[in-house]
Image (tube, rainbow, N blue to C red; front, side, top):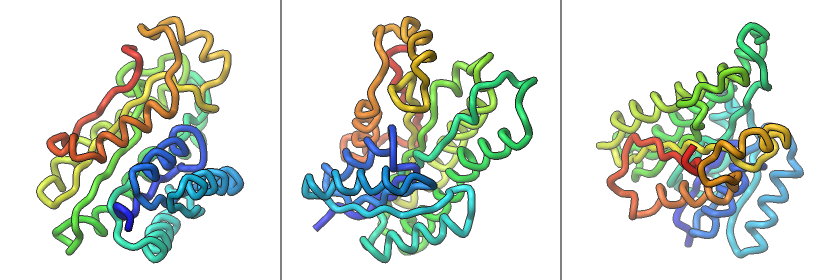
Length: 245
């Protein structure tokens, strides 16, 4: 008997993969979503199975409505009741000043980070809201400290997309709180993933008050807490996990 199904978008690598492994430890069946790299998603599923958990990989580009609908249908067909969603899928769009940014990169960044989060959250609300006959659940969005810091000279387009996630978290949290759904966000700082290059880690790490780069597992712990009964009165909140930066 599981705690229910959690869908983790972008769950095949980095922070998303750490979240998948952590929630599986708490007894959730995990749908590991990926847009590319099926071998990475399969590795996460294998790790969870080896530890005695339940998981399966599901392909899908969250910026495409049909893919999102297919993901939710297939995951619930496999594991049953949806208990939660973690919107971890995201891209930086690459480092560039605004005057160097192309429209294609801007559109893709907003499509994955913002449209994808909204589409997946809509599907989750339809499945979990008591208004639609659901039993309630949890939605966690992945924001970034870039939303607050602005990422000047690096990727202001990415920072803008994460600012939208913060606003969306506040609004949706208030909208569905009375329908049994808790919506919150986690805003990581500088984390040791392939989204942060070695050069950027070296340059930015000294500006972090704790003087080190964070781990994906530390973000996963924050997400696990927001899923726990201990966070039952936390709604529409962006939890910053950044070493003080």
